Length: 299
Image (tube, rainbow, N blue to C red; front, side, top):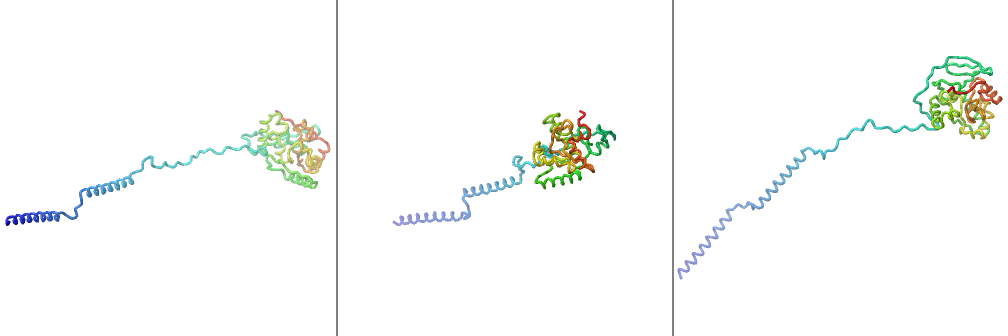
């Protein structure tokens, strides 16, 4: 019995000794120790973040690739084409021709017409009995440029216009002064459209137009029908009272060189313009017939 008791006590002692040993072992391990798998994950994460930060830093400092760089802005070319030129208006062309006929003015000369009127050519101008003449035979210098109707012509027109208005009629200027250059444009356009022979019947060659003198006026609509209107009939009957003549009357193309133009009036342009215009009107003749001169181009 006594032996059994000793054996039990011995077993209990051995069990107590084993429990104490286990307790000492557990308490000797560090409390801050981290499981190995957690440490590995944390280390990898930190390394990964450092790697990403390093990669981003390198990416920011690295130059852009050629594809990512914006293309440089180029300067606008200096040889851009300009807008095409517009054509000159048909109603009142103003473009200058590329060339101009320039000839020396003929020497001064004097002669007498078949009707006894003196013809004086001076500095390229021709005067018949003191009246400046511009027709197919007698030309004007290319550089002659009064720039507008002469003051005397304009004043006479205004008096005539006022007199017509007092009769309830309306007169207005469709075309007055034209330069050599403008007439060149007009004439050559007509030649291109109708041919030279036809154009010569109704349009003056440059240097031969009365409009260049500043003494000629085209009235109202510039139409043949103007002669049949109240204004046209009044002008035909009264223009001479103000120093004007109907320059290209009906049925006088062989003498004047131009077709009938009821709208075209010419101021005589002398000190006695009304007296001369009245004499021509009462004669029933055109200017060429009255003075005994012709109107024909040499070629």
